[in-house]
Amino acid sequence: MVEQADDAPLLFWAEGPAVSLPEPGEPGTGGGCRSSTSSSAWRRGGKGEPLVADPGRRLQDPGRRFQEQDPAQVEEDQIVAVFVVTFDSRTGNMVEWCLPQDIDLEGVEFKSMASGSHKIQSDFIYFRKGICFGLACFANMPVDSELERGARMKSVGILSPSYTLLYRYMHFLENQVRHQLEMPGHYSHLEAFYDDKKGVFPAGTLVSQQPIHWLPSIHKYMYPEMKITHPAGCMSQFIKFFGEQIVTLWKFALLRKRILIFSPPPIGVVCYRVYCCCCLANVSLPGIGGTVPESKPFFYVNVADIEMLETEVSYVACTTEKIFEEKQDLYDVYVDNQNVKTHLEHLQPLLKINSADKEKYQRLNDQRQMLMYSQEVDGDCSSCEEDLFILFFMEQNNRIFQTLMEISASQDKTLTADHARGMGLDPQGDRSFLLDLLEVYGIDVMLVIDNPCCT
Image (cartoon, rainbow, N blue to C red; front, top):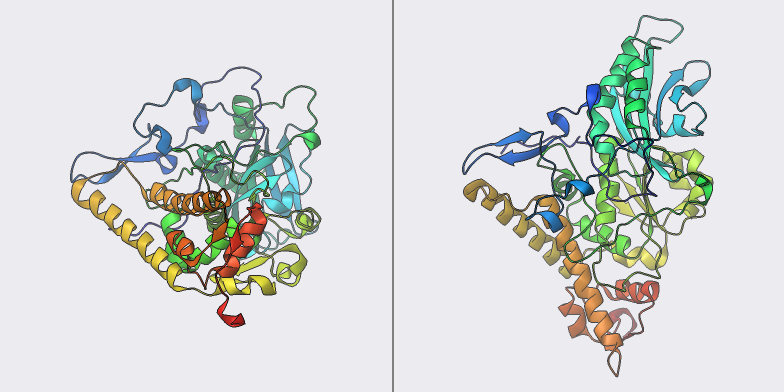
């Protein structure tokens, strides 16, 4: 099989407060902003036939895999802002144009043009702005201009309260940022786009008072889902990139730690890793996690977000700014490319890969190989790697919490080494992980596994 590039835009799975449209519009990208096959789903023609782009089909969530999607459930367009950011050699990053003109875009000029972007040709960035989520496409074009110091850099972006919509407009934004570089100041396409897609916040609602809803209700067949532009999505790239350390990240995500991922630009692909980290902690059992902080995907952050991060007890984010590494009060876990580390002594044992971790990672790879084989030989596309990856860790999490809840409801409330092994954990190697898990989730269980260091 041909390897797919690790540069596909993603669809986020969390939603903010819904907005209403001024007038009902036709779902989809519509008009001159219609997405090309670069943001379509894929299908296989017949047995043995190659994968081909299918612009008329979206990847379905597993809860609807065997049924048609209800047209009434198709989300309406909810774009609340469109903007152009430019780099000025005298004043730095600045918003040069936006609609609506009275919207608060403070800080978006830094979120949509990552620090260090001047060294690359193009990028895409996902970020959070208040209760909204943004997608911006950046491009850098050499120009024969002393005033611009030989380079023209711009980003074109959008904001929406629901980031399940953002993937639809990647292709449009990529085209528009090139258009802005070649013909600065011509905004007619962006104006038409906003007029067609604009949504408004409910009347009388103060943005600052809106709650942020990060996760949808998850039932047996539902989980946060991502739409991508090619079948070899970011989950497979995530697995290849981190290898066995995925299991380490899984533990930190399940414990709701503050995870910060550093990487030099381009940052778009690192937004995938933020998404994947959040997916590791999904639990579909009712009554689990109600009292723990949500694992919040902040995506790209910079120094302007420091004050906000100081108040957060759980998040996953990425940055291109190395200065964050020195600000250890802002994070629990720091991921420098493929190096996962923590400065907190009580979390140090979780960095060590144990026998159960190795077995878990091997089992994930075995299932991936079986899936790929069935797709190649049998033409079976009823499942995909995204389903496999997310359901693999959800099943693991469900097994752990199901066992813990059964023990807590028993008379002696004792968790033994056999229980740990039954949950797919190493009784000794995962002892500190289990202790933290019981504390974070407030589960009344007594751990009787001896610590070999204390015997």
